[in-house]
Image (cartoon, rainbow, N blue to C red; front, side):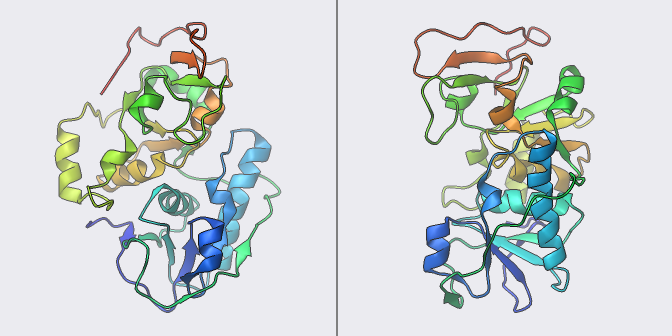
Amino acid sequence: MNWNFIAKEIREDDFIIDCRSLASYEEATLSGAFYYSFIKKAFGSDIESAKKLSGPIYSIVEKAEESPRILVFDEGMGMYAARMVYLLRAAGYPYAYILGHRWPIDSKLSPGSAKIEPPAGEKPQPLEGVVDKAFMEKNLTRLQIFDTRTREEYEGKLPRLVSPEEGTLCGRLPGAFLWDWRSLYDSNGNIVDKSFFRKRMAGFPFMPERPTVIYDYNGARSCLLAMMLKEFGYQEVYTYQGSWFEYRKSNLPKQATTLYGSRQSAPAAPRVGGLDRKK
């Protein structure tokens, strides 16, 4: 796991963030760890949603200014820890890292008591490498798009992996390639080695000269792949934080659309370039 966004040791002066469930946090966490529930929420591209996303991120950066780095963990180097680190780095804080250990962690533990709900900002603040629906609409035909959901979600069989609701629109962004986020982990649930990922990239239809946008359902699963690609030197890599949660409600073109729980497919939407790209 020789990635530059992973730290394998815990230091006494780390600012620590626990991204597990609130119940798990309150039962036992790393001593002094903070809990920020916003990281599990879905955010759209409207101004109010952008305030609710960027406000807490910049609050954390300000609160951690006296610490040399921020260390983030969840049950196993998962999507919420990756999302937190990606967004902190997008806010200009380069010293945010995922803890490279699975829970339980052999360290000093105590019941968590620092649950914080930072307020939304007065105005949206920039998050480098994060794009909105307006960007997607303007650039849709020239983007290379990766869908990091599961194949069932990608093929329009499920609207989301967890707790899908009947009547919800399933589908994907037009022209998107499937890059299932579970393939970023090995059989033990650890993030794959950098050399393994390099080999995977060599056999994947990736065009580094094109702007790349990565999405999922609520902007969480895509962040790990974005950090991996950036570490290989691909600078024009973005995450679409609104992801399918927001995009499905828009009038923009979609592929493989169905209504979950219904035998009747949703009305077909136009395809970009007439291609239905699969992994």
